[in-house]
Image 1 (tube, one colour):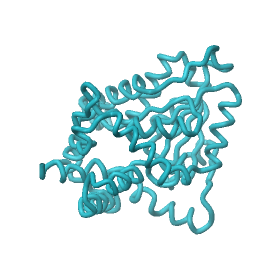
Image 2 (image 1 turned 135 degrees about the vertical axis):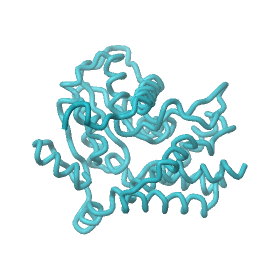
Image 3 (image 1 turned 90 degrees about the horizontal axis):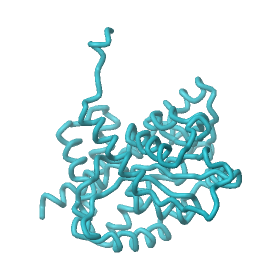
Image 4 (image 1 turned 180 degrees about the vertical axis):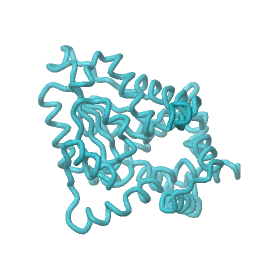
Length: 294
């Protein structure tokens, strides 16, 4: 296939990914100590869903919001089914994907940043704290003990990502950035969701800002979708990997850590892509239904 015949990523997708990455890097909370970290040019980047935390953080967050009457059971279950179906069958409706992207986080329109942060703290305590993988937490602590900084990189809202990072004693987090004006959410995203290529853009932007040498940095994820981020750094580790990432990691000689056990890990290898996709898409797609009814 000639270079002219090779499929190309649409320019607008590149732009959205770059904007999302830059926004995430700009929004991350960096805890600056009185002195520079002992190893200022090396850092570690951790995906969250199924890497740091069992399950999808956005799903736990959505359930917490559902309990607080942000949307109905019918809406959230319908959206989860759509996402699971598209991933199992392997066909996604372009109109649905565009609608989900454009409507992502629309359910918080009109709410304040302070309100979401307060709810996020509550939801972390009730639904997330006990789901942190001890093994992954220990890996992050090893980097901190070596004087390196540690960031989370996730498609979850930056507010939730920052809460998780702070509760775990990490340096900060990069996540999907929702637009807000005077402390009130507009219901629109800055760029796109921090997913796939956008994560890599966020890491590159943060590395440039903080003077990191990416060849000395480490990356951790469970998903093959995070290859753009993992391939940026010199040290890669697949944690609780899906089947494609496990195969790729073995081929490349990357470290692999699996904190699941026995039957649970085997089942996860078959279902993780569909379930994680459903959870991640639940908020983005489900709330679009609610937005239309307003």
